[in-house]
Each structure stands twice: as structure tokens, then as C-alpha cells.
Length: 153
Ligand code: HEC
Ligand code: HEC
Image (tube, rainbow, N blue to C red; front, side, top):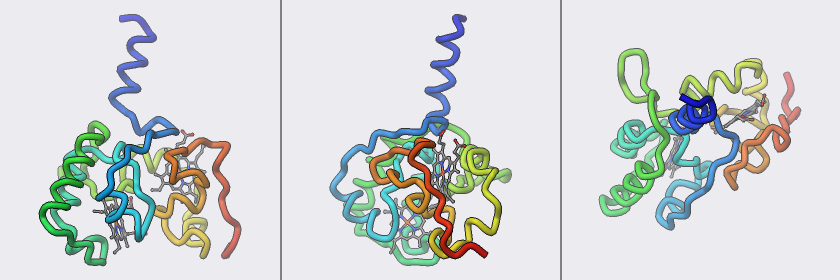
């Protein structure tokens, strides 16, 4: 196989290696899933994970994010249609519900020391926009990363 083709196939299989994601528009998703945190790009989890997450909204990481069935199913459909591919499961085979627990996320962020995540201007790895200043437009490029110093221990 030609090298470029092999690389293309790898890139397609692992879209999370990318540093820019198109942010597909979806009214219900924008209304319901971007009020407490970033509208996470759907490409960052696979379909199995999105389905599992959407089936458990009443117990959503310690908050109640319930939706009526129509909205829930419409958003699930949107997320799974744009989902990334492959491999977001725990070692016991359960789907991972957190982007921040996926192997690619850990790999990309392994140089960040544990206390950095706890700075008051960051608080949580899930707070992408604290460091990725253009996260809302799907841009995670290195040049747009700024790690806030506030709350440095
Ligand atoms: C009422 C507030 C609220 C709403 C509404 C909400 N979430 Fe969340 N979500 C949270 C909280 C709190 C967390 C945990 C954040 C943390 O760990 O810092 C979270 C975490 C997540 C994570 C995991 C982030 C990580 O650690 O990788 C995903 C994915 C997610 N939410 C998707 C959604 C989707 C999809 C919707 C819409 C159906 C939604 N959320 C609506 C509050 C909310
Ligand atoms: C504490 C700051 C911080 C937070 C919070 C953070 N990141 Fe990052 N992110 C970084 C750094 C630093 C890198 C590594 C940049 C490099 O070495 O190219 C990175 C790399 C990435 C990359 C790869 C970019 C590339 O150049 O290939 C992606 C994608 C990414 N982060 C997504 C996320 C997402 C999604 C979230 C939230 C769920 C998040 N990050 C939260 C700091 C952060």
C-alpha cells in the first residue's frame, strides 16, 4: 500500500489525532449541551460512548441533565452521526463516558502535571477552553493553547 494511503487510513481511523474539528451545527445540542460546559465536538468520543452517556442523563457526572425523549433521541442521533471511531472503552469493556479518560486524551496531555489541572482558572481537565482558547470553534491547535497561571500552587 502506498504510504500516503496508509497515513490517510490511520488519520480516518483516529480522528482524535487531529487538532481541528469542524463544529457541526445542531440547535438542540447547542441549547442543551453547551450551557454548563463547552459543546464538546462529537468527533471526540465514539458512538458507543455517546449512546451510553445519553442514556444516563439524569446522573450526568453528579448533575441532572435530563431531557425529554424527543430531544434526547435527536441529540443522540446527531452525536452518533458525527462520532469518532474506535476504542473508547475501559479495560473491562465498558464505554468510556469522558473524553478526558480516552487514551488519546491522556497521551496528548501527559506533559501536564497533576497540580496544573487544579489551578483555579482550570479546575478540571474537562474545562478545555481554559487552555484551548479557540475550543469553541473546534480549534485545538498548539498555537492557540495558553495555560493559565492563576491559582498556581
Ligand atoms: C446541568 C449542567 C450540564 C448539562 C446541561 C450537560 N452537562 Fe455534560 N457535564 C456536566 C458536568 C458537571 C460535567 C463534569 C465536568 C468535570 O468533570 O469537570 C460534565 C461532563 C461531560 C462530559 C465529559 C467531559 C470529560 O471529562 O471528558 C461530556 C462528554 C458531556 N458532559 C457531554 C454532555 C452532553 C452531550 C450534554 C447534552 C445532552 C451535556 N453534557 C449537558 C454538566 C452538564
Ligand atoms: C491545562 C490546559 C489544558 C486543558 C484543560 C485541555 N488541554 Fe488539550 N492540550 C493542552 C496541551 C498543553 C496540549 C499539548 C500541545 C502539544 O504538545 O502539541 C494539548 C493537546 C490537545 C490536543 C492535540 C492538539 C494537537 O496539536 O495535536 C487536542 C485535540 C486537545 N488537547 C483537546 C482537548 C480537549 C477536548 C480538552 C477538554 C476535554 C482539553 N484538550 C483540555 C492543554 C490543555
